[in-house]
Length: 205
Image 1 (cartoon, rainbow, N blue to C red):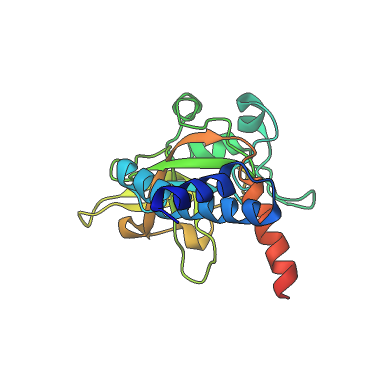
Image 2: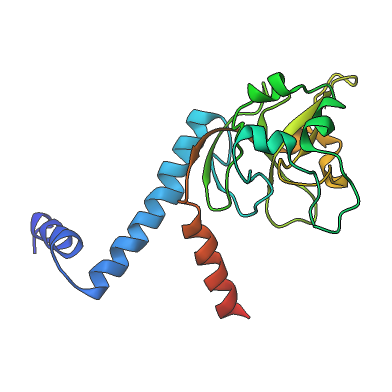
């Protein structure tokens, strides 16, 4: 069989044949192309090793619009003894309402969203960054609320918009642990990964 005939048969198998084997091969090819060509190429263009991440928690969710968020209690439960609102929490850290209103993703984002990342070199207060934390399986995606440059390098402090306070793991985040800065949001698409990982965990238990 000539090379031309073989190529024609392969093309027919991939794009014309309606079989389970053809479907499996197409899925495998799509995975290989995305993982080893599209993803690295996008990462190179955007300046980060992880250009696309799925949001797997609700720590950046807002229950409603910005005004409601700014005035909402900063408690995580109805039994919370604190009565401070989100607004004063940020104002005590020199982030006024008008300043926060100009931040990227001012209305937060949701679990299941996809975030497109860019290199984090120029991250400033108000930006949303993705960073790694030791002993945590997934990277954290939270908002920068303070930057310390006294050592000549940026050291970040972050907070999830929906969270009660700043976690200990959110203090002293070195620049080298930051993967990227969120610049674009794609709603809901991240649920594909979340559901797939959940199903995989059920099978491996």
